[in-house]
Image (cartoon, rainbow, N blue to C red; front, top):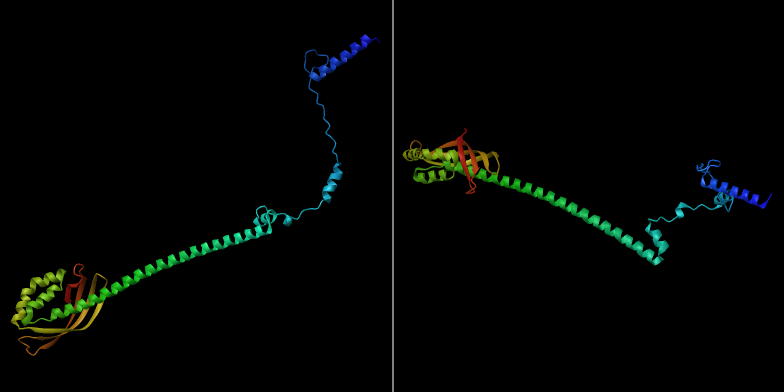
Length: 260
């Protein structure tokens, strides 16, 4: 074969190879052929896989307890600090814990004291109200006794003072009624030469608070008049409604009635 023919064949092979690489389908001019998938060979491992697995199985396994906890301050201190620094860190932590406990105790103590003060305030206020009520009842009882004595103690020699004393200790309906009839009372006392003196035997509180009370009083009296110049004993049971007058601070009779 001549050299020219060999060269022509070699040129034809190169053209064919270029067409295959570029995607041209052999035998069909101008038409791209399907891309060929050329498998790649991965490099062989330096160490056989069986030997690698065997070596990994023979390596010692770390104990989880020996692995330092990243969140642990003691391990960090021991790993990155000197023994003195680690000791200082521990003392700092202990002081912080002690300070936290002290703050907690202070907060608890304040809460207990606040509750004690509140309970003491409620108890003190209740005690004050109870004492004020008891004191008001005693004052009402004393006022009812005196009003009963004033009412039955009337004399012709001192009738004007006696009537004035009864009026001064009255209020409301009782004062209005007694004021309307005081002229008749005065005339009867003077005409019959009445001289009556009374004393309280017993007295009891029916009901009462700091503003009003109902009191029952038993009174004995010796009554002298023109028909009984030596005097005769009389016994009365009187019920009085007493109210506290805020302006004067006195207990006044708002109603008086004989009950036996």
